[in-house]
Image 1 (cartoon, one colour):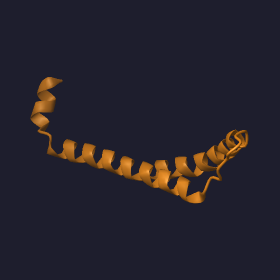
Image 2 (cartoon, one colour; image 1 turned 120 degrees about the vertical axis):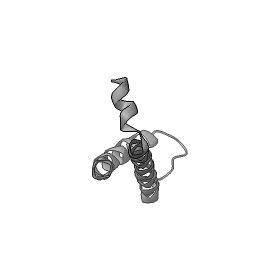
Image 3 (cartoon, one colour; image 1 turned 90 degrees about the vertical axis):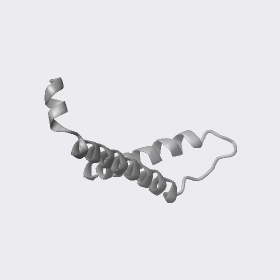
Image 4 (spheres, one colour; image 1 turned 60 degrees about the horizontal axis):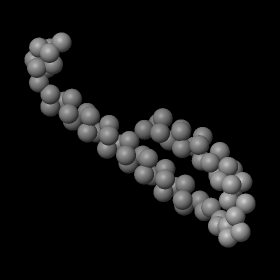
Length: 71
């Protein structure tokens, strides 16, 4: 989770800058709000949590004998 949060903190200002530059060229431009980045960051954290949780449960329930037999 720490790595996901660090990635969000690093990527958000960079994405904001480049999106502002890109959107400035349009006739009907919109403003980028802070909650858009918060929503994207929250979605990334939830997806990372679900992925790691699923893999942890899968590894905990796996039979070690089957794993050793296939190696």
